[in-house]
Image (cartoon, rainbow, N blue to C red):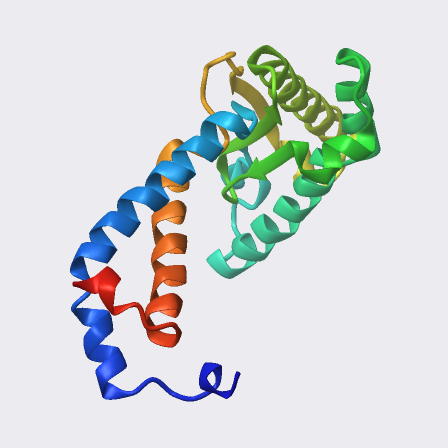
Length: 208
């Protein structure tokens, strides 16, 4: 077994580079395997809803410097992210959708993508596209309601924050991972395995 730990020789490298037929066939086979996995065990559907978050900086900090506004945006963004994953918001989603728990929602069923100010995207994954759309829409609506209700009672610059649902999710046939990713990973994985075989297990007949 010592040959497995010895560095490849120049002949091994040349043999590897000359195996262009193997690479072509291997990439095709790997891609086909990736496609087969995609159709046999497909990833869940993904739906997206969007909430427009406006910090209204002109009103919140009318005479402050850009640096103070930057720290304000960073601080308030962290607060809003906590609201998005808060118990109140998760319970609202759980109450509007049957057979799902808060723990499941936090364990990868929901994904949040947002800038500091602008459109916050709320993603939900599920094997049923309609259920995925329902989860994403409910999440966005519950988040906007919580943000606006807390802003209404705040007595600091946070009171100027406004959240509006601008796009509800639709039950589209969009998977969380596209088939092209499976094709690419399948081809790369097969080529890596093939490289290992060619370097450490001579098979000259295969390369002729």
